[in-house]
Image (cartoon, rainbow over the protein chains, first blue to last red):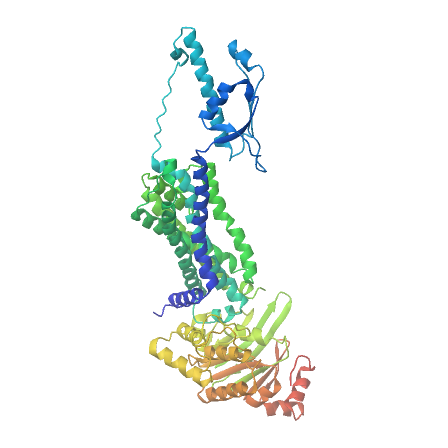
Length: 382
Length: 244
């Protein structure tokens, strides 16, 4: 093989594989990202499915022993331990006129005081609310019956909730965030190599000689870009393989979610990530060939990493839906991955177009870098 | 043959080359002698096409590296001003990389690499990674990279920086041997002894112009001095930036 691109590619790959820092960087993101995610989900799931008693402060318990009994049956008990620091107490206050109001069939005031915005206490607060209102309903039914009325009278509408969410579509909410990891792993994994073969080359003073060899700067850039892309796609593939494995260990079925990704789908994701790997590398090289040192390049690239993050998170959280997203680089892959996860019908043509578009933009970027390296201003930093 | 024809080059307001002309014929060692900042490196970079001259031409066997860089570079070996090694590659791998870039392959390449490593007395470090190489060892790797493809022209930018006595001798012998084989060698230096010891022709550069040109004897004759150093100082009018 005497094609200059492949000569440069093989040399850079060999060089990068010997660099422990680069290899570690490529692996660690793909590995620790999903792992971190799994831990977060594990905590979330155990909170959601928590069936232990809810301990709250109850004031005026002596006024309504029957209510207290009912609460206890529902797993809500008086707290004996102090509240942990940083957590607002949940207080249920029963007014002193309880007996009187119950006897005269007036609404008896019960105050629930808590921080309703606290994410961690949300389930506990909801359970208290439900317990109190079920007691209220029971009492109401009894009153109606005693007055000779059928309790059904106050149920004008019976709203029957039928959840059509498939297990897959419920998982999509969860997997949406995991997808971000898959997409970003491509950007993180090749980063170190990209810096090393561009700004690093300049820093160790080997760029001048390399540019004086009988190969065009475009060939040089392509060889280097392919080498860094290999690392990027390696990280991507690793995360695509690891994520389903890690999810197998999560008790997702407890919250009614099943994540089943078949091998063909995983393969499709890998194929989708490939153009993105080239794109990520092209962007990174574009920035770091301008830098004079490794450090400078790292600074630039950390800013650059904000771009894919903002794009993906932005689309994810704003729930933006627009057909054009299917065709653009990055968002196109993101949308396709979302469809795959949700088990929706795949839009093959947009998938293909966004892939080709991504490759085209990368080629344009690489061409610009090639031209940049022909400029003495950039090479010698004049 | 390397020909330089009235090169002009300015960097913003600094005039680096101001109508520089000379030629380095085959089978001769031509020394570019000049104080620091005279334009030696700029001139060499222009010859191999990394810098574009504002006007004038630099030809390698009649090929202008600014117009046709790939063809021009195929016939030259370069020892640049700044040379960095790939710390994670061995000396042999580095040299082989550059040989491959020059289109050598397989057995032929491996043999050429082995020969040049032996020629430069580098067998002991050939399969060690460049990390931890001394300045002299790095220099040798850079030299090996420059000559592994047996170029017809050799351009060296201050090749003896940091070399010990033994390595300097290896370098001199090597250059003489290459001259014997008909290579045109152009090297820059500010070390007088070296120029005097090696060069068939000396081109003295000052302020981007040729201040004088000729053999060592001719330069001495020209200035009426017996030592090249004295001649040199007389030619450029100052002894700034010169090492004996």
